[in-house]
Image (cartoon, rainbow, N blue to C red; front, side, top):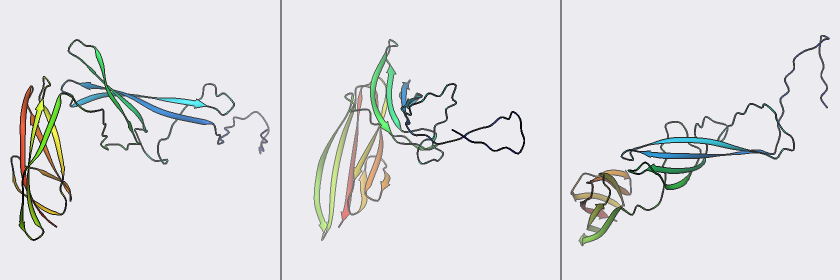
Length: 200
């Protein structure tokens, strides 16, 4: 029961706001890879569960994701699909994302690629001086796809390090990693070699 007080008599419009429990929601997404897999189309929807004990007819719904902040992409499951050469839609994989702010990068792990492979081996190791070592590594990357791909090779490097030699320029991921973006041709192979000097 709600009791109202009014300074004037007569019929009046009133708006009542209150908090209730028993309402929850979750977000789900479907993504379709486009063309060379460099872009995707994303569709999302929200499933609302009402266990409050009452119904809300013609209710307008507004959901808030995260800690009451501006988060355009609520957390949920992303399922990724791609059309094959015949136009059939194939399921690629799925992953769960957290609340994601506008312009923030989203990383999805969809599984292990069987048509893009990498083989890594250590080709040399030697001691240069006291607590100074030099190691060399080689990668062979193979691509069985009908289109070229770019493979991100991220190598953890401990200690105080410097790159002595490399077959292509690296980028410093952070203080303890080196990153290469290696272009591998369609139905082809590419190699990456580097030598790093580490001081402990």
